[in-house]
Image 1 (tube, rainbow, N blue to C red):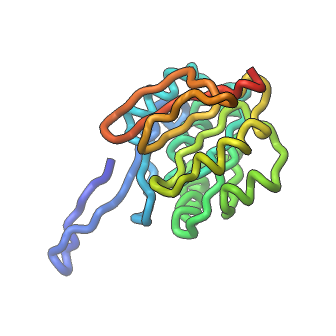
Image 2: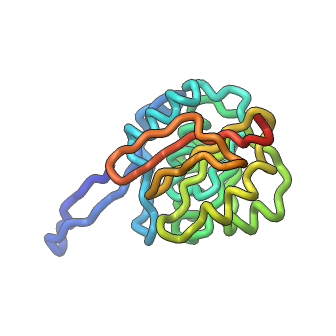
Length: 195
């Protein structure tokens, strides 16, 4: 969702990018995010479906928002009582915006790191109940990420994957839910080795 407003001095339109938190303690709160290359927030109806799949209430869950971008998934998870959310974002402008939104919401169970996703995965050993993975399109991220993600999953952990293509079952990953909205393919995956 984005809103336009008229710039009074020049008469040109400027765009304020916003996402809305769908449910929980911050329901209907609007969070601003910058224009940045590759930054494309997950559509609201897709997020609603994903949290329906995840069971709405995330009480006790530790979550990783690996390409946090706007923070849509991470802040939504916290709003729905996740125990903690760790957000990873490599783009400086998006990272700064995440920090501003964390302050706006007083999101105390949230850590935000300015890091490359692969660097984080290679250095961190923490286990997560839910990993949100929505990398930039057309960069072949999944061939690099999927081999690393299962070692970061808690028993019965779930990975959310959003891509510009349909993700298929492999020897290592089973698709447990999937759907498509426009050009967005989205899935829940379970590691075969942690099932």
